[in-house]
Length: 469
Image (spheres, rainbow, N blue to C red):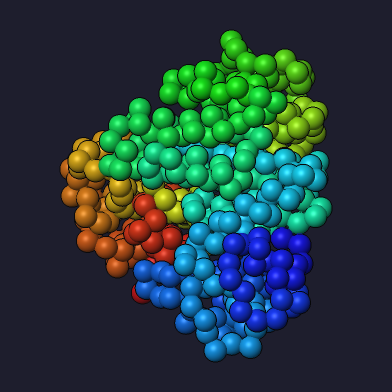
């Protein structure tokens, strides 16, 4: 957001102003008082455990020049009052984007059941070579994160990358009202939030809202290897770009694919990037992120770059420099004693759990064992027990030697695994259990849904003492 007067910001956010309309606000907009700085706007949001209004004074003391909330506070700064602070933030984000679109901003929306955050990070780093790019930190993909990221757009921003999640029909359409996408990327359709949607077909219907929001001169970048994504080409007026890890797609105004994919000892893939159609060419790519699933993510990012006029060699070079920007997603930590800890604890669903377990299996080192610390995959509804047993069985089938299962479905994970395992009701003690008997060639994977906060387990295991003592 550019610096604006309080009077102008009140109009942009659709709020009532209390205070001096001439005070300059911006460019920062924050919802965490610890991030407040000189000139910033602090948005006081209600939360499950805290009310943002209680932290407004702290934000002002840190330099915030104004506060947006639902009630007037005894503060000597302008205040923007609304019936719903989150809704006002959305209106503000919409206003910022609308103004920037008039100056040539290109908006990219990304959705999918898994992998959208990793894809978002790659897309942002590819586009950065063509102009100033704003993208969310971590998974800011909901009704707060999308408009908050949008407020970071400034006069020199060329690209805005928005990650868009959904927990129901209409959610993505609503987010597209804040950030109207010019390029839409659908990574995949899987089982995340299955309990809320009821079926993968319903999930596909919701994810497809992104491509339905695209204009005729936009691009729908679609995973041609996913049978639930491919039909979305018929749900959009935008030009289709088809992406495949299996070879050249048979359709698409732009076709992007990989050949000769191999991986190094840390499972960082290398492959040849190919494109045909409006951006023909090929170039070698060597990724710095781990996991075979990253090939597909990189191809989607490449396709986005190609739609914006980047050449294949430039896209390949950008992908080779790209790093994992979001925490706790396939982070590799090699301890001084040689143990390798894979921290993929940010979130989990059956599809991402399977990808993580396959990566773990591919990381086996001579003489070493594989240990999996797995926790609950949330929001799976009545299929939850079955899905956890399937995950345990997959771990066994891939050769995992030992399982530490955490959470309400620990017994289901262990039942599916059928091998040496420990079940725990919560993360307390999980690091110590995983650390028992670890040798210098062993590899430990930590993965669960966000609610279990297993990143603390991974961080404890990654420390020199590795969860002991």
